[in-house]
Structures are given as C-alpha cells and as structure tokens.
Image 1: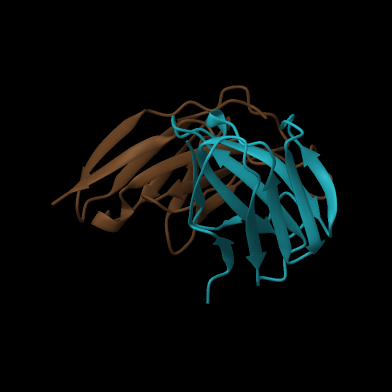
Image 2 (image 1 turned 60 degrees about the vertical axis):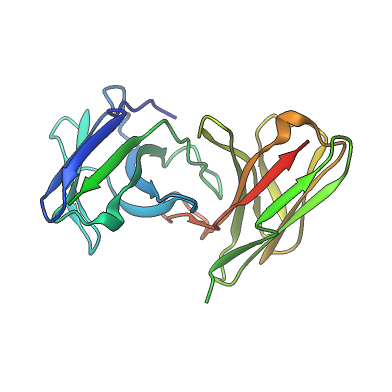
Length: 114
Length: 113
C-alpha cells in the first residue's frame, strides 16, 4: 500500500471547521483514499472515502486534489466528540482479492477545545 | 445492537498461558479481520477470513491461530503467551471488495505479566 503523510496533531475550537491534510504523492491510479478515525478507547470508525471527485456524507467532506497527490478531510463544525486520531489510508482496488487490508499510519491526533 | 462484538474486553494473564478472544458480527458480512494495536498505537493487520477461508496472514507467529466456525465468527487463540503479546486486539468485518468500509469492534486489551 502506498504511503501517506499526515501531521502528528492539530487543534481546533469547537463549532469551527477543521481541515485535516494528507499527502500521498506516490498514489497510484487504482488507489482509493479512505479516512478512518479512532476515538479514545474505541475501535477505528469509517469516515469517508473517494477516488477522484470530492465526496460529502453526514460526517465529513473529502476534498481531493486534481493530481490526487493530496487530500483534505473537512469537518464542518468540530465538536468535542470529534476529538480522535484521524487516519488517511490508501486502498488499492487491484490488490484485494476478496478482501482488502487497510494499512494504518500514525494519523493526526485532533484536539477540540471549547 | 452491537455490530461487531468482542469478548472479553480485558484479559490479564501470565506468560506461557493459552488464551482465546472471541469475535462475532451481526452485519451479515463475508469478511472478518484481526488487527493488533501495540503500545505505540500502531494498528497492524494480522489475519483476514472470507467465508471461513483464510485469505490474509501477515507473518504472525504460529502461536496465533485464528478460527472461523462460520462467517459471523472469527476467534483468535494464542498459545504460550509472551510479554510482547500485550496489546489491544481489534476484530473487524466488511463486505467483500475494496470499496466496503471496515466495521471494528471496541477491542480486547490483553496484558501479559
């Protein structure tokens, strides 16, 4: 799986938007960009994924650069419950068989303050 | 309803013992996984099963043996436990295919003394 680079930590104020960056300069054409988050003392939780176009769901938005070498996870209004480690992961559609392992990096620890 | 449930939540045992962790998913998924999160918080895949068939085995010591009695269950048995096995073990499931998100359990914290 291709490597991703994320900042170790970020801070945000509650009720403000948060932009979490991810660099993946060696991404291949068959890599999907997935985001998961891990809240304290819980298992990872799926957030969003995309290939080329920007994506929106009830949790977040994913903005993908035109050259796909970077992406940004956008939380529109951060709450205290969004404090977690956010992982940006590349998942190769061609290297799966009937399952695809997710290779987690170190992620970005998001702190949300009042 | 808990989608992916693991038992026990905590497990404290001595070196050399044999222990099992159980995982069940009620999502109707075909694929199940075991991940290990060490003290530095790195999450690494250990095994994956699809319809009871082992499809991913990531160079895990032979002391670790997964067993899948049916596609809703994937248990992890560990023989001759060592101090380095102390970690949080997460079970996950997904539909087959690259585009299906993984659903994780809340983990089993294993402490070997």
